[in-house]
Length: 448
Ligand SMILES: Nc1nc2c(c(=O)[nH]1)N[C@H]1C(S)=C(S)[C@@H](COP(=O)(O)O)O[C@H]1N2
Ligand SMILES: [Mo]
Image (tube, rainbow, N blue to C red):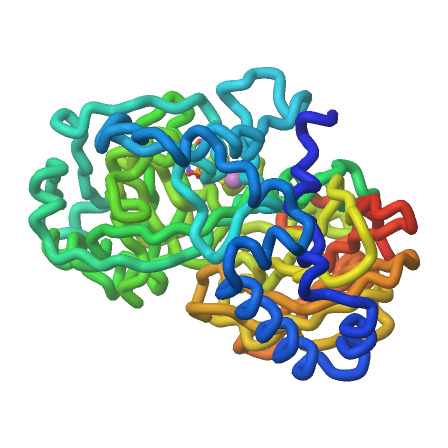
């Protein structure tokens, strides 16, 4: 399991030169004063001459390494850049035992090691029902048809070249598998945030609004209230999309991801983007769209992706990912090395719009403090939050609770189970608890 744990090095405390016992006292008294004084100290340390910093007692600054005295690598030594070799532990990881066939499996994003709101494409989580392919874009086509000829004027087939000539838009969005956090319905089961919440990523997607293509084909929007999206992979994955989502202009036929073409694992060269809706509807290797006048009840919506309710009935077509948040660091499997200051950070998102507020608790939900929302706060995208924390060495339970623009408040496990029971797989958006032990170890626990 150890290779699956995240790097405790990320939790280095602030350098001693700007965090004394006295300052910790000040943090407790008032964060603002502390921030001002630590900022002053940090600036002073940066502008001080080398000798002064050596005086701070760190030998690393005195030893001039060989690379500092020799020529570096030439430009374009790597025509396509790669992360530092020191970051090799930051990987998507498979959960062994999740499925019997690894082509039908998932890999999880290492949320504990990421910053901001964009997931590097190479670390985007993967979920394939029948493995992935690197498809030749020159041979890929998208067909638009109808279940009944009266619903469409001209069925059409588009090549990638044709699609890429059309007006495009780019949108920063989250993508979350409906099965994310599915292991945690009855007990805390997996140790790290990578496995509890890593079927979640954030990207900028670029493509053509599907509405434009349907208009081009002369779809009768009054009668065609649903559509079926179909993938070209062996799983023949199909999902019903309600036409309201398409009419709003939000649904994209996308070829771009984080400034370049989609990665093969994420559906290259074409995938459906359905903002706020669970991952399974974001059909990869998209080859066909059929407009129709009723939901299709396909395999992926009749047998799978349904929620078993406490009364024994299955809830169907619950597609919108409700408001949720997670503290990504410190998180399960990490260790706090010393007492003192930590930047507690995490992500919040809602399939219904923007995040209004994130509260953080350090005592298992008794007291809450609002976190700082950092950077862009966008609808149906990841939102980064940060909050200062001084760990006094005593046991603590860290939680985050997000509230979205509709006023919806992320539930705790008691509230979620009261409505949903504990036999579900999908759509678990409960508040996560990380327990910090006196040893500094952080564990996955549930607080009821
Ligand atoms: N064609 C096709 N599309 C697919 C899938 C698939 O197996 N085949 N998996 C779906 C599921 S369940 C999810 S969660 C997302 C995952 O997208 P990603 O692999 O880019 O993260 O793709 C969806 N689209
Ligand atoms: Mo999924």
